[in-house]
Amino acid sequence: MFKVKYGDDYLTDYVKFTKIERGVASENNLITEENSSDGVEIVSVKRGPKEIPMSFHVIDGLDVNFVRRKLGQILSSNVTKELSFSDEPNYYYNAILTGKFEYTDNGFEADGSFTLFVSDGAAHRTDRVTLNSTNSGGPSGTITKNTDGSVRIKVINNGTKPAYPRIDIINNQENGYLSLAHVSGGFAMGKITEVDGIDVQKSEYLYDSKDDTSFSKFKDVAAGTVNPQNNWLATNGKLEYQTDGLRLKDQGTVGSNQGVAGGMKVMTLPADSNGHVGAVNFYSYFNLFAWAGAFGQTGLLQVLFTDVNDKLVAGYGISKGDMSGNKAQVKFWCGGSNPRELGSKDFISNNGEGNGAGDMNNVQFNERNGSTDFVKTGEKLEFYWKGSRIPFYIPELANVEIAKVYIYIGQYTQSNKFMTNLSMRNISCRKDNIQKWEDIPNRYAKHSKFSIDSYYGTISIDGVSSANEKINGAKFLVFPPGESEIILSPSSWVTIAPDVEISWEENIL
Image (tube, rainbow, N blue to C red; front, top):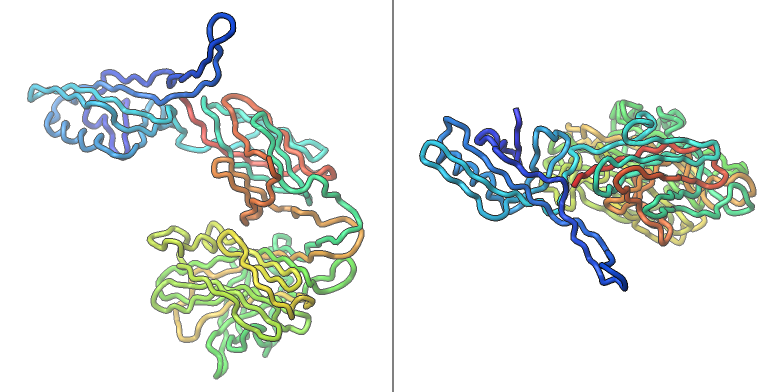
């Protein structure tokens, strides 16, 4: 049975449509100028809006007055609603009533008509088209990896309007540059002149939990080990890899002057390629999950960076001591001659779903996200929070090397409700500015993920906003209707092509 849905209502529950004029396409609006010879020259073409006139007969047996009021209620909207037809199940229009709503009845039967206005003149797909290695060669296009590290991508936009894609790229080899050549323009990020080996200050990734999924290189601290940030935190509990990362398995016990019971693991950073342990210039990416399943749940998670003697250099943490509500804080600490808390930012420890949280909504540490990072560049400490890094300058730490990483998870002893989700899902550590000539750990690490969204005009790397990576003048890609081609090129030395997944919304006129 043919059905017409407008918003949340099926119009065909009340009427049988006798005529619907969806048309072939919206009208062209032409801008012309006189030609020196006969006729005119077309300067530009712009698609106009679209109108869909619809005529109907009220379904026999229904009260014509009830139907009149019901249709008036459904159609009298100040905003567009989704209009869909059962013979086009994968598409919808954003439409609103225009002009007069005609309705004629004799008390028993009724006929009428109305027109819905589609401002963009297009029908939109209800789902996004995805092209990846799994469906390559199908109706949406083909992805071909080349031995020189490049990728040739044939995209088929089966819509009749341009599409704005999201392009996800996972590097299978270290990389310093990315370009996407397309008929709509060229997109580029990174540094085209970056080389694979040269006598420069370079960076090295020292650890990545993606290669150590159970965090086996982090060891339980010895009995009696003091928390480097605060000896008020007991450390004789146990952390264990569970489901998604490190979680608190056993709270342990506390001393008479302690208020948090928890466990702690530590990893001494591996030596760099020069055989040296410790980094004055240091970067760490980590993914944290903090979601309280009920009001009043509490907990504490810390990522602490110390020198070789276990003295705190800096720390990043999540604290929820609220035993009645759902407020938590992200906290930044430093060591040095005056160990202290540098900053604290409140957020609601929900799952990022909003529900009135406003600008305190947990957009950073929820089930879907969790990406954050820390940077030390001499005396400059930077802590990532909601799309940017917050800098602090601690002069006495300028030449102090980070040599160990501690992970602590604990529970406030005055609370008996521990947070449903409080975990360290992954972490990587990088040393910057190493003096040596050899292979360079490049700008983009192996397994790093680029996400380039043409609709929103955004770039992220491993979930961290990275708009500054885009090269000046580069353009986000737009897929025209039909078939087009993208040539993806990484740095010249890359020999293992990256994995690519592209998704877009197909729209038809």
